[in-house]
Length: 218
Image (cartoon, rainbow, N blue to C red; front, side):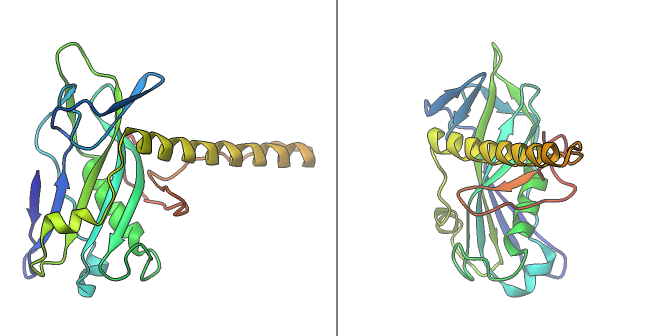
């Protein structure tokens, strides 16, 4: 599904949101949830209304870069979305390297803001919680090909999606253990709790935060 956003007084900012609603068998089970490649959830879920379109971050419009993100997200049993992970990222300014501080975080914020508004409804018989991916492209209106832009971001299969989420969970558990151990050694109580931001960078890209996004993202 392609959606093109416009801004008054600016060039068209093409934003491509590839919704994973085609039917297909590319699923992997994990506990009570399944992990589904992009474009393979149509047998279990249908769209409940229109999908919100991401908006090109205003602070980076002047650069004129094209950017894509492979954004992992979870569809809960009630059809809401959350638990976002940036699985891959690319920009025309520097490939996967960040050309400026907080650059990719701004695009992750915009993508998560849009996807957090998406709603799904289960097909007949119900559907399990599903982890999948949306490839989100941000075009600066310079006439680039949307498909070619999306191709710069690797959209993983079910096993790759599962690995990305499990890797982040292991990191969170390690930090929890470290805080608890520190509290025991000091004779006190660990007061800090882990409350990860809605978007977490995966694939060794470090942690990335998105403030105030992902309604009900946990």
